[in-house]
Image (cartoon, rainbow, N blue to C red; front, side, top):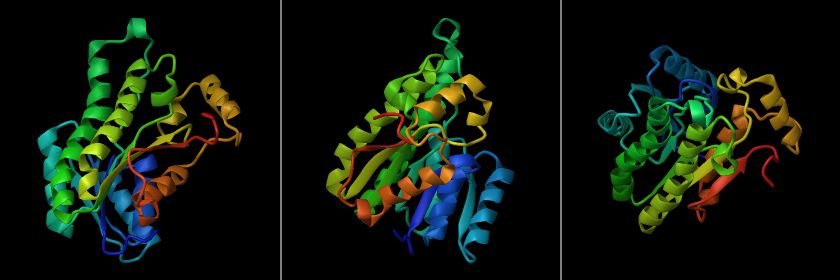
Length: 248
């Protein structure tokens, strides 16, 4: 599972799972393009990549992933800097909880834009260079909530479920060009986002996990690296659940 001479582009790379994915690829030899809106946080990710592997090349790109032209520009900048895009990870995402009867239209639009439309834009932007290379791997970061649903998270769950369908459809479109598309569905992972969860909901998920504990961002980043590696060369259109045994 080495990526020497390859380039990985990660959206939402400023913290949490996105930062762990960036460091994972850097440790395995890849050049990494770090996409997000928080320059200071992205610089911290770049510094961690360099600290973990001296000489690692990490390029910060400011972009609004909900804007198609901005995503296309980020991919173009990656190509200018590194000459290729081998792995693209659509990790950018947010969670806004609200019961259905209180769910506002702007919340639905925001969840779909950040969690789902951004992945559409990334897949479309990297498809052309990957088709030209006749190789590539795309991974979409969804959630077990997109599979099982969750009260109070209808908009979030719907946006994450859409990623699973997007994964399967794009995998069928691009498979003949040797481009693989997969997804990972994390469960409860220790990040800044999950720290905001109510204690009761958090404890419930931990109890449901066969391993009896929350996961770490590195648990997800390892799965993403596997799906992008040659070891997964005959895997496409699949969703790998990384939840400690909640969904079985």
